[in-house]
Image (cartoon, rainbow, N blue to C red; front, side, top):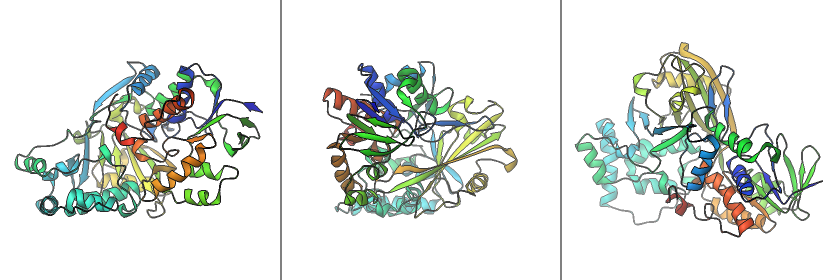
Length: 465
């Protein structure tokens, strides 16, 4: 039986952050177990059989932490990055509308523009004063009935795959621009675009290899392959004797355990876990994610030549977001200058079904209808991957469930962190996820309190600190 001080389950950004920090502190008594044959978790990239590179999880690289910035520079070097100004748009009503939508409603047909503006005015005239009970009510109180109907409600259903009425709004923080009547009205009267909102208006992306190249470098270059066991999964955990039982029959004894697998799956794999906690964990909601990559010959039309990504609220398309992925790096296509690529994301849940067998063809048809591509004949490559765990849904019951699960685990020296380990969407970007691993090590090694998982709003207000 192998014995280690620290056992880390999962080699996504959280597990890698923990391993990197342990190595930085001179701690060598640890092991990372990964069920796949690659490092990176959801922040992985694949090259399809035609040579096109596709991300499957995190796509955009920006940061709240100077520590994260330093690790990224060490991973790929100063010259390993391309830097972009964010150019994001909404496609609806057969036109492009700058993001954020609510600040640029002047692009809408007049009836829809007035519907949105009137809803904002009504909210100013008759503010509710009542605390919203769910995300739907927050949308209505924040944006007004018109914006809710025209964009916010349909788009958020396409993203989350759950009705807004079943979600809380505690996750929002910096992620949504609230409406300002004065600002919106000025934009309408003076025909001006409003595209400067948001802290992540610039981002960086690897020159080669997609997002996955970052985390592959962190694992192999900065940590070292000897600390990883790939193609190995933990089947169950004995928390009393602190033993992890692996699917190949091996056993690993540990003192402290960091798990980055979904917390509901973790609880179900712990010997002696109370039935009521297992049932509570099953109430956590999550959506699945489908990534469809379309490789194309030629070059994008002029309207797409500088765009980063686009949002799609309308029902004709299955996807909620499409990225002009070849704009992120020319090396994302095998023949730069002669080919380009679009990457579409479609959510899925028990209340929003997706026909995975037909999704690629439905995506191509919608891209043609939405005027993103000219013809089916331009398609030279098709890629599709689906992840059952895509987004951790901030449902109404989420926080109450997590308050039961995390203390139970931590009393037994088991810590659940990361995108689905912590189950907090508001701190589930690449930087947040990596720093959850770093901060866990600081907690168990240096007795320094964690901040990202404990104070998400505070962390998200501190860019590059």
